[in-house]
Image (cartoon, rainbow, N blue to C red; front, side):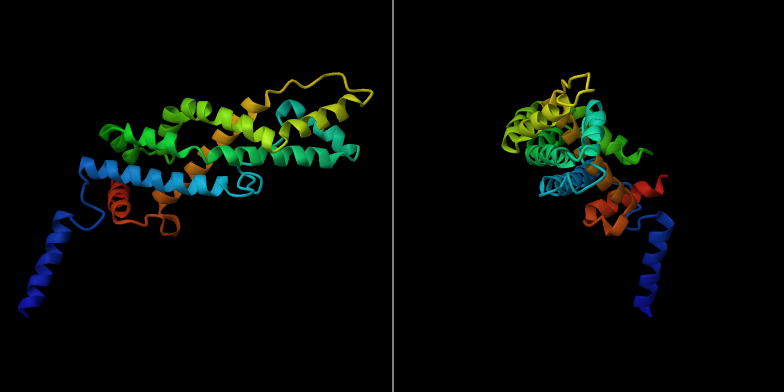
Length: 233
């Protein structure tokens, strides 16, 4: 009976003072740790997914398509039975992006180290479902572009992108009625698309944690910090 009374008293205290797990306000240090943990989780998953074989090519949300100015060319070539040239070029661009994404980790680690307590609180309590991703975009895009560009350039060579591009443009330029030539900066195009694809995946992972989709809050700090944040909405 005595144990029952003590147990009931504890339950009453928890309910009255709102100190149940996931409801108490986390300290600023906990909030910062929670946000950084969420970001690390999302970044690791995103990089691993996109850097795998066909990580870009096999995912419609991030697949790199023909540059906009070349889509008319693609349509023309496919109508003439030269679709394989287009497919080889598209595949090679996506494989180049997969190679570049592997090198994103140090850029993100540096950005995480510079995140302030105020940054973490703002992200945690933001009504914006991709607030953390937006923070990363603003703080890493320039560095990612600088880091990715030479890697993409090398990967374009390794994956024969320029070879396929030359085949594509040569085939198009031989068509009697073709009037305009293509001057796409492939390195800049693929670099930006690789960065865009990475942030699309990071945003997806952030949303999973914010909504706890499939039990995405897999650690106690994520459950505690985001559980409390849920109660503030």
